[in-house]
Length: 342
Image (cartoon, rainbow, N blue to C red; front, side, top):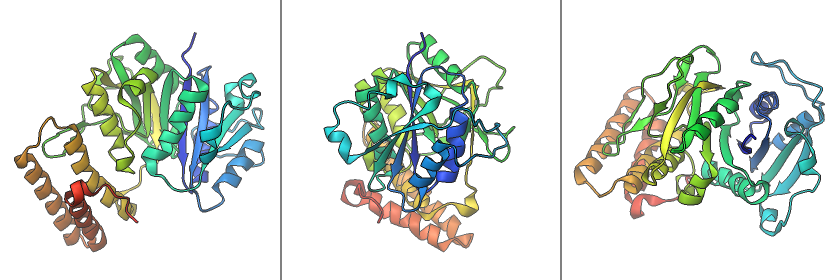
């Protein structure tokens, strides 16, 4: 009997990507999964377009699959994040439908960030769906038909595996691998990539953390370590989750036979908020996950950020450079400044 998986997709003003991701999910081979879309306070017509897709009135074109018109309409079960507090049971018709013919849509009134937006879906899954596994999946990904089978099969086989992730290839270069997860130096904050194992090699690789664009975690791990930390808001929450799992004795693995494709933005179109949260949160990650404070490591991290800010300034990216310095300032101020960037 297959383990039950809840797949959580966070949508924020990105319905075009989300419906392509959904269409790829509804064609996977895995027999027992739930799909939850948490709309994180979209300000445009995202929810309306998601419903149009589910009804079969909006088809999806992709180089990765052929659109399936025969599983439409997809039945939407709609809730609000606020309404979940008083919700006792989900719609009783939900469990009578096949996995590829239903969708849970949770509407959040505000943009709660990646961490808290996913937490809404995780709490719903654990309370109402009795899931064995939770899969976090970026809305700008497309999945291989067999990706979920491979992830669950490996996680089931290795009892110490707490979190596993797939090979992530570039969406616009489908045969080129972008990353398989990362290792992190908790002294200077530097991220490094483990060696990429060929997809035909059955050997999996133990790593420090799985990237949150495709992360499968066992329910019992969440029971032990808790939810994603909302203080991160965006970036490094996946690394923190994995490092917390490792402290509890679980292993983190990349599974080479599982594959997804990710629309990774180029450096040229990287948002200013990514410069802020990516740099601020590296301080938070080290503070939370080092066993003790080390002044040398702290100074080293600080110097690395200054060098990066100067590099951006030389490259003519003054706004990005200022954002990095803003992040460093907030990280140092008020116990690392756990505040959302307005």
